[in-house]
Length: 347
Image (cartoon, rainbow, N blue to C red; front, top):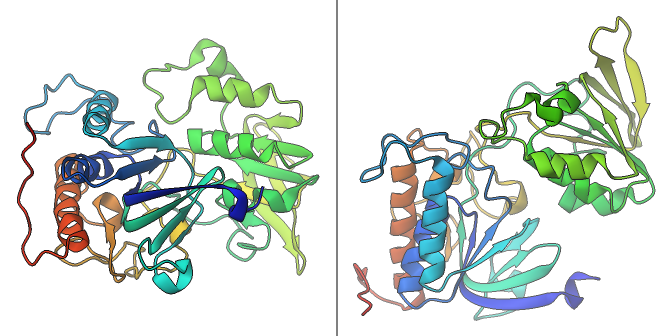
C-alpha cells in the first residue's frame, strides 16, 4: 500500500516520542483542548524506561522504577484525551510547501498511517547508537548500511541482510525485515540462547525484550549467529556485499554474504535520535536539535523537548519541564496569543 493509500489522521499536536518530555507535553496540550497524539516507537526502551529506580524526581518514592513512573505519565496524558500509538516514524514534512496544506502544515509518516498536524513536537530522546564505527560502516552508510529497517527494509525484498545487536530496537527491526528479506542473519555478540533459556534476569535487562527475541528466533527466515562479533562491513562501488564476523573462540573470521547491514548498539547510546528528521530542522555540531527559549526549532510550529536537544542536563525533571514549556508555547502559537496562558483549569 502506497503512502497515498494509507489512513490519514488529523491532529492539532503530533508528538514523536513517549518519554517524560513527550508525555508531559501531551498532558498539557490535551488539557488545553488541543487534539493530541503521541507516536512512540517502543515504550520499553527509552532512558527512563530502562532506569531501575527513581531517586531524584520530586514527590516520587525512591522505590518506584522508571517504567512505573513512565506508565503513570502516559496514563495521565491519555486520561485527559491524548491518543497514544506505538509507531515507528520514518519521515516528516514540516512546511506548507511540502504538505500542500495551509492548515495542517506538518506531516508525520509511519508504515501504517500518516498524521497531519498543525504543530509538531520532537521528543525522541538521545539513545541513538554511538561509538567508533566498524570498518566499512561509515563508507557504506546509505549504500547498504542502515540504522532504520522501517525506512529501508523494502529495498531488500528477497535479499539476505544482517542485523547486528541484541537490544529491543535491533530485535524489532530484524522482525520487520523478515517481511522482505529472504534471510535475516541476526548477529549477536552474547550467548543469547543461554540468556533466553533462563540465565538472564528479565527484570534487570530492560534493553532486550525476552518475548520478542523468542518470536524472532522462531521465524523460518532468521539465522542466529550467537556469540559472534561484527568485525567489518564489506562492499564495493555497488554497495554492501557482506559482513565479516568472528565467532567467540575462533581464530578465523567468516564472511556472511549480504546486501544490507543494519547495525544497532547493544545497549543504546547517547546520540540524539534525529534520523527521521532528514535535515528538516537545524542541529548543533553534536547532533542535538537547536531550540529557542520556547523550545521552538528553526521551523515555525515545530518544537523539540528533552534529550533530543543534547542538553547536558539529562534528567527526568528537566525533560518534563521542557514538555511543559513546549506545550504552553504550542497553545500560544496555535491560538495566535501574544501571551502564554499559564494553565487550563478543568472541572
